[in-house]
Length: 359
Image (cartoon, rainbow, N blue to C red; front, side):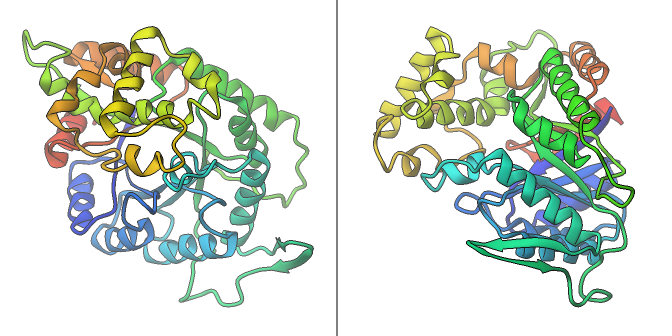
């Protein structure tokens, strides 16, 4: 299985990209969550100039954040800096919207957005709508301005629901998911994508990606001999993923109670404690300002008790080398092409561990 890394945009990010390339990792991704992290287009521009081989990904942008012309301009501009090395992840903006106190956009809008990006980034015209006004648009300047010649890889962000996977199938894109380590769930996503693709007639010149790879974002902790798999070191390495799920559950408990009901009693109690600890409630209109600070960053020691073993095992890869390789093998058999880790403790060391394990 291939290996890659996901980081937050911040000064010095290009140094991590250079190190990832030196380690032989396949891809280097930057989050697009405007109210939490820096700008991915700025960060990836630095990475593009500092590297020569590694693929560079946006993970992920959304029509709820950017218009198609603006997003396509950024993506095609990156493609001019790093020809043929750009991966564009697109999604409904689940996290990026919720950090604004808003809900994500719809699958239908995601599909229209993805198609528009595919068209524009390949030098084709596309339909652009604002209210009742509809116009065909295309890049009016290419060449040195933007690169619409070298291919850009597109992937759609999907969790457990079938709608995003169906969008990927109809648009001919790959998939990316966060913390989805269940091979059966991956097989279901791939089945949905394949069925949607088979049911979508395509004209000879219709837009489609030549790649349709699958990526999973997780965290990795290789246990030392006799190390507690649920000890402080393991909790620190995986806690950012666990707390992101608890924050999401706390944020959505009131408007989408079905998601909270999928949690067990211990997990629901952890959600309650998180809300109390952050000084907010599941119905407070400003709860997003209390739940998402430090999102996907290293957790505070006092929050280690919220990092439940059940959620660690669900969202992250913790184990001995042999245990990890066996678990990764089952994901590969289920169709996952690349394992992306999101390091927060010591990114250079964590990237080196990943490279040693998989490359």
